[in-house]
Amino acid sequence: MPVLDREEFIEQAYFFRAFRERLADGVPSQDILQRVGEELLSTTKLPMAVGFLATESRVTGLMAPAMRHLGHYFTPFQAHVVAQAEADLSRFPMEQALVILEREVEYKAKGASLAGLFIFQFESLSRNRLGYAKGLAAMADDPMYDEDWRDYIATLQTRLGDVDFADLIFVRSAFFVNERRKLNPDFIPKYPPLFGEKEGKIARANRGRDPLYLFSALQRQLGYPEVPRPRRPDGLEDRIIQLEQRIAQLESRLKSVESDGNPTIDVGDVLVKPEDTAGIPSGWAAKRLGP
Image (cartoon, rainbow, N blue to C red; front, side, top):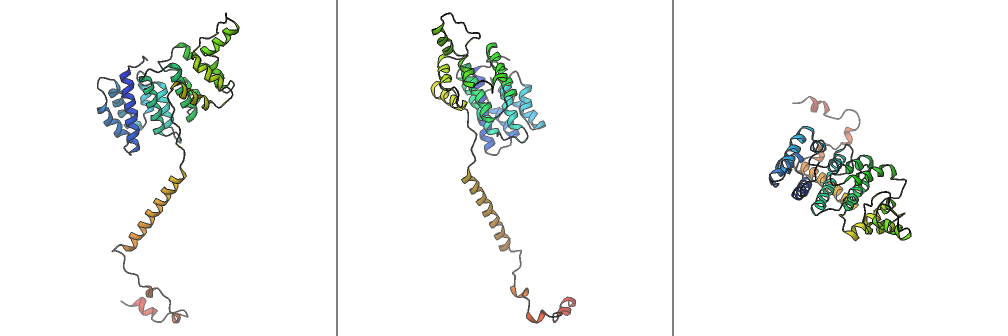
């Protein structure tokens, strides 16, 4: 798969943003796919890709399988993120997935560094629990990575959990090589460095700490794109929703009482008289048998 042109990334960012905003407005995804293609730049390949997504989603109701069929246009990482949002019983909302994809292609359109792209994709997997095995395999197939990066991503599948993530970055950085050459001028690294000197310094400073601190420092210091945080449940919002539901129930009951179709209730008709409590009430047979 070749690397897409910058205008393709710009249109993809618009597509993911428009899709997310219209989903939030309650528009069905099939309707969005059918209409948004007309808004995209016709000189790009995205309108044709969106048209294919619209056709396939009407049959299956899913986008991820169609994105995999378009492997020459959408990356495996994009298809993986959408598939995780569409999975049964998934707690990963589609809105969150679309924000991740939007920020990723915006970063690519600005001229992403491979180190920054790797950090963004890896943090997206870890922060949203999207699965390391399939997620890393999808990352490695991104056409922007060269063979050295693919080999590095493949080794992460066997070393994650055994080696601190900050060390995995530090030992593949230019800073690590420079430090070793201060002690041994003839030092030659076994593998080519993939991260710069600044990434190496930040990684060494975060050894033994939560990787989220490392991600945050890289974003602050080097301008790496920020991965959207999962939305926290809002207790106040839940209580407001419950109050609205109760008010709606009360309004429904009031309407049923005040409706013109209900006859006026006479309390005297349902009161029990003392003389009617012993034996058969007087006039009972006449009331039952009368016209």
